[in-house]
Length: 266
Image (cartoon, rainbow, N blue to C red; front, side, top):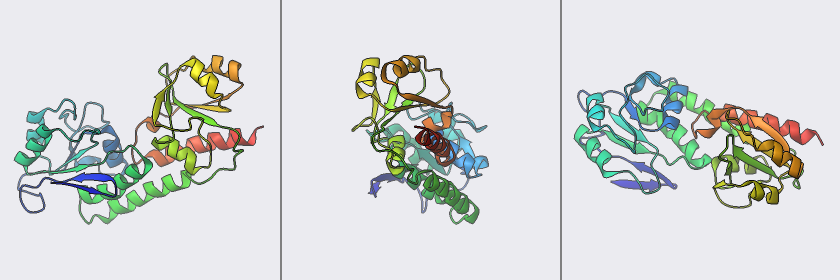
């Protein structure tokens, strides 16, 4: 059964009643972003399965692209948490969930609204009625709200946000970081679109006033871009910004502080 509520996919497969059954335990997360949020909620001990890229001590059960069905069956989770691709959840995972009698909860995590929905719904998916988890989720949401408040900014100065490294993957208005800029009343140098890989000449043509590199990888192209456009280069060395998890609030505050400082220097 598939239900779409408020644009967020929430898929539940239930073998009996509310999906609980004898012998099941905890949750398996097939998304590093969801795992990071679970740990931030203080529920890391509830994890009984994870992907190879998740920061957790739980057993690896594969990923959406490379599911280890045997390991997932052995983990016996009560719930399976996923970040589905645009084409939806693969039938093999649905079949394993049906055999386990496990519920599947899915959040796309492409937008800030997606991330907020995941944070709000995750406590109940993990432990229905747990006030401590719900309160911690409220703290994470409040941190995101504080980070996304408007910043005094000259609207003629556009900002280009790019993933650090050689790839030059930029965050357009339709990405969660692009939405962050909009919420802060800071104009995105990319007028439309989501993630875009930009060449040097494309960036020169865009002529951003400020370039923010996101992440810890070296970005050797920034010096040339600054020389050719006069752009101010700002580095936010926080790889957590590249993961659409519920912990974004604290990391977005770092971007906000950097932009505020640049905005005050003319």
